[in-house]
Each structure stands twice: as structure tokens, then as C-alpha cells.
Image 1: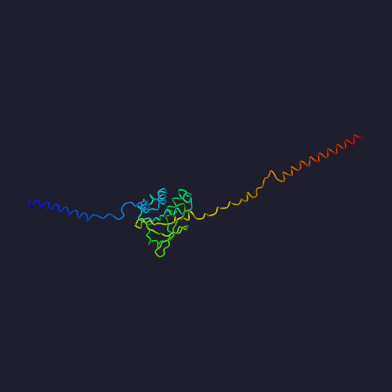
Image 2 (image 1 turned 90 degrees about the vertical axis):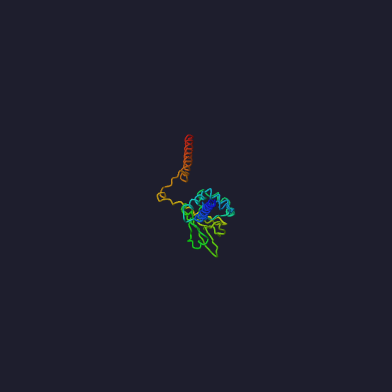
Length: 245
């Protein structure tokens, strides 16, 4: 009987030892495992409703998710707040075509992961996801001073205030202004003047069906009628005198 209890106790002890070793040998789950949801990050932070809508309607959010899963470079997103969009001139977004809205959103995305410290050594201008779209540059320039990072689109300068996420492969920074690209909102070059007339066209005689010549011809006709009438009157008077005599 005692040997039976000893056997049961040995079996239980063995099971406990196996369980402990299994837990020690199991690999820990990687930090931040699973797909990264950019719109979820923005929604949780609040005050990014307009930017979320643009990310979704232009399908840039899906593009970012796919690239994060297929690239080892990571990505960086600058997220304008709702107040940033509200401070734009009325009709700014509605005045953009679908392609231009895509370019606007992509100009807020860098195809590489940047921590705040990494901007100190960034080579300006830094290309964005919009670079090359429609032949535009869509670059951003960064300057750092006293632990402060400024970003410029050529039209707008703003400080990177708040890091919503700063963990590879994705960093997300709040910006209080929309980074209006110079390629979309900069002054457009003046339209080219029409080409000068060719020498052949300059030598062609000008045709005219009216004008002084026509008027002169028209004036000649009344003058001839007057002369004919005068000659007829003279002839009539002469005939009358001849009849009288």
C-alpha cells in the first residue's frame, strides 16, 4: 500500500517538473507581435478623425499595413490633428482631386522608421511616400535644436510635439499643422504665351470685302448718276430752244 502511494507521488512530481521545464524553455512572445493598426493607434489617441478618414478613403492605411509586413525599413507617419485641418482655408480638401488627396496623405509618410534622435542626422530633403507621384519631389526638411525637431514641407513649418508611437517598425508623430506640399500648393508657373505668327502667315495678303475701297466704289455710283442727270437736263433745254426757233 505504501509503495502505491510512493508511486503516485513520484508520478505527480515528474509531471510538475516537466511543466516547469516546459515553461522555462518556451520562447517568449515577441514584443508588439501581431499586425500594427495605424488607424487604431490614431483612434485611441483621439483628435485625428479627419486624418483617419483620409487614410481610409485613399486606401493609404492599407498600403502602410502591407509595407510594414513586407519591408525591414519600417515607416514614419506625421499625423495632423483635427484642429490642423480645421485651420485650413475652406474648401482646401474638397478642391483636391482624388489623386491629389492621395499625394497629400502620402506626403505625411516616410518609407523608413525614424526616432526623434535619428532626425538629427537625416539628409535633407527626406523623401516621402509621395515622392515621384506625378513627377513631384514631395520632400520634407528637418532641423533639430535643443531636443526639438522641426519639419518643413516648403509651405509649412511645424514642431514634432508628441510621439504617439516610437517603436520599430512604426513611429507616429503628432503635428499641429497639415504639411501642405509645395508641389500641390505652391505658386504655379505662368502660362506660356502663344507662339508668334510664322513668316508665311505674315506674308499672306489681307483680303477685304468692305472698307474704304468698297465705300469709294459705292460713292462713284451716285456721282455717275448725277452727271448723267445733268447731261440729260442740258440736252432737254437745248432741244426746247431748237423747237422754239
